[in-house]
Length: 286
Image (cartoon, rainbow, N blue to C red; front, side, top):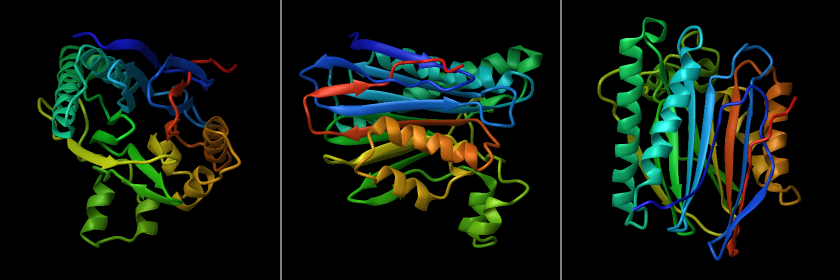
């Protein structure tokens, strides 16, 4: 059963933005997406994808690639491509557990493809990518997650981290061997203990949560969270005078102003409770 109405996928070296109404009679969400190369890197290794399906769901995917030369870019693009291709043909009018199973299969397909590509091409050896992907409707958010790209939920003014980083420093934090401040400046803060495409099999975390009108889901790469505190992210997201696009722009600008040491990507989805969906279209900023 092919549920796909729209696929939007891009990995741009500057920003993408804009808002377009897609479909009528579908429970409403406002969506903004941004990616920026930052102020230090020569290549944007982040990729994002969005799907709207007939079941009334939005699929969001964000990946942050790693590897020498252009391998990180290849890994993240391949992962997003495989996940969107898998989910475009899946029936997503499902119970929570079944949505999770579809996400597991989609991420598993991406892992197989990235691993195969890395194994068969010497220039891609060792490449991999983070993945955070969500099936979102007006009742709930179901997430699959590998790596240190994160998902947050703004709910009634509070910002809650839904995912747990699969990183070496987070492991040390859990063991209480280092503090939060030490983790932020740790020399191995970018070392992952799980990634898509680095091994034949991948362990995937699944998270599900209900959400209500005015809640905001944030998916982001560590280029955002390494530059901006969760407190400041929460302040921006909870600002009721800003549109979803303005919030996305503000977060990117704050990360750039803080140094922009990595690629910065994010997807924002706001539960509006209306009958329309507003979705970002790609736009290449010069």
